[in-house]
Amino acid sequence: MAKNIAKHFIIFSSLLVATVLILTSVAVYLWQSTDEGRLPAKTAVVLHAINNNLVSLDINIQVPQIVSGGSGGGSPLLKEDLYIPVQGDVQIPMRMYRPQGEGPFPIIIYYHGGAFLKGYGNIETHDNIIRSLASRTKSVVIAPSYRVAPEYVFPTAIEDSYSALIWGVEQAETFHGDPERVSVVGDSAGGNIATVVSMMARDRNGPDIISQVLMYPLTTFQDVQLESRDVYDSGYYLLSRQVMYRARDLYTPEELMWSNPYSSPLHAEDLTDLPPTLILTAEFDPLRDEGEAYAERLAEQGIPVKATRYRGVMHGFVSFYEVMQSGRYGLQEVSSFLRQSNQGTLLVNDNYQLQVRQAPQGLDRVREQTEAFAIAAYLIGRTGVDLFNDQ
Image 1 (cartoon, helix red, strand yellow):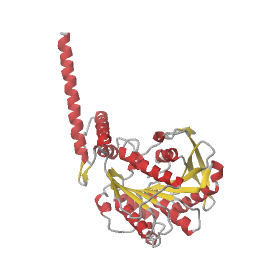
Image 2: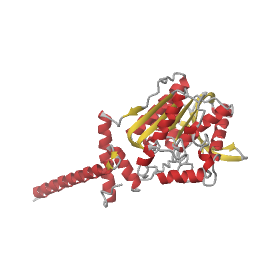
Image 3: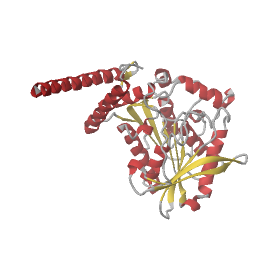
Image 4: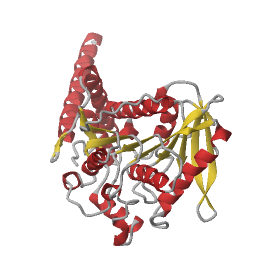
């Protein structure tokens, strides 16, 4: 009797496992299939989870005052949240991560993404990148919480951001920073801000910036024909045409603002004397083409530029470096570029050519697929209904 029960239990368990594997495989296959192309398994699973509200886009990690640098390793970092002065006798919040020790350490001013709009991004949602860059580059990272629309329109965000640069250079000694080694970094709207701040520093005889890193940047508010804006505008890839229009209407409410070089650097007449630049773009991103077009314009005007398109990923992919290998690749490339810049060993080929980084291959691909199926099985088990909901 006991043997029969055990035998039936084994058979039942095997059937259950087989059923879960089949359901998971079918679900992942369906999630990978999109009108715009077939997605890698990990990208498909992450996007399905986000777009079906199974996980939150916000990363809101409470970190103690002495914190780990994350996957970058190294010594614990010091964290400070404070207020810094900007135009109009106003103070804005700012977060700083810095290594322990006397330094002087290089300084990175990091401008977070978020479409220039309240509720779309802040220093909390980008805390993992800010913290990891400080650890990986052994730098002081200053992340200002610049004011955003609809309450504050152009040029408030960039003036706040430029003020943060000035504050960082002037106060460098107080936090063991090196004012001679300052870089600007930003993602999405923050990528726009980072390069605009570089232009402002050039135009106003401000601090010397030794490098700029722009991750999937917005570079124009004008109505220009860009294939990626048309193909990937649904919002499934974490940025929609609707949000882009909303950003333009609220951040730059007057049409004259759209052609200002400080809002649309892609169309600036003068891009000379800007720092060596790294631009990352994503295959499934409405901002892909304008980021790459900006890289071409910089190169045409003599700026050393490296641009890398990451295949198989969506807008904002570096923020997911903790769960996506391509995000880790991107963060590694950014960190390496900044370290070389800080050490004075940066070499950029004069003959500009867009580099294309393939989706993970080999063991990384096996690991990504294995993790994707594990996450998918978890999501299916947690929801239990509407398993094959497509985008």
